[in-house]
Image (cartoon, rainbow, N blue to C red; front, side):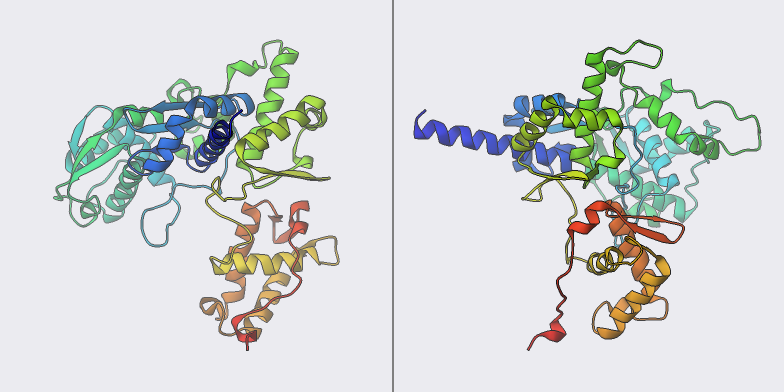
Length: 419
């Protein structure tokens, strides 16, 4: 092969790997929000789609003329670490009300190519009034208007609606706000990545008429999530599953975790999944998937990681000094792994450690220097460590997971130590 051909082949491999990791970080890539990223996905979509189908069993749809690429990531595990967030200072996570309004708004937008915020609000009022399982939307309440605006703004960020005139935030202050939207119904339909439509899943009738429907559904959430995520390609409990189907499920289930989770601890896998990874086929596919996706494969006796050296495939990193909680998380992790009781300690002891660090460095983490500061800092740091699967935290007891031991401080240095 000529030098030019080698360069072209290398560029193709790099672009395929980049597109794969872009879609893992953002399963919906739009030309409007990321023209460069969308162009890479569009040009390499055939090979990228084959990668996701082969290793994860996920489908990729690319619409060049409509300007979006959608990776349908199907899963049956609830992940509280990636909630929808409000597009305001603080970036607070969506609550139940905002999620329910988001779904109702999306359903009502399917019927109209153009609408105003006032007309849309009226449609949501009527829709919630007709649905006994939902609280009625009350435009007279500012908190309700704020939740409505947050849900609608998320649809704007996703590209499903476009503001032609006005600003959604204006509705929070006045129901008379004038905002005009254009609706992308095709993209709106693609937002839901589930093999089974929620309308086909029976939520069941409550035996207690006084029990809130929302609480009834919440109590059955794992079951309902499994029902809308059921993929018939792997067989059902009532069918005799073939070896081929079982092997396909083992492959896809393992690789879905490898590309989605910060680390995959072997203890968290089933015996069948561990056996698949240890097989010659599993070993070969593990190396191939990592190489084609641009990942560095890290294997240890207790787990496996797909490490993205460029940080494309993730929206957050660890270790990272971008926030006080992450710095504190690294300091506390060292204390957890050094604990005398095999990496197990308590939240109370960590608060004592945090208080000592704060006293030693009074110019650091000033927002936590108050009486309740150490406990608050520990809570936020533990949330970081749990999200990266480096510790478990139950009932005030904190235990290091195997991956937590890969981070060890040889010493600390702050600006106060510099001369």
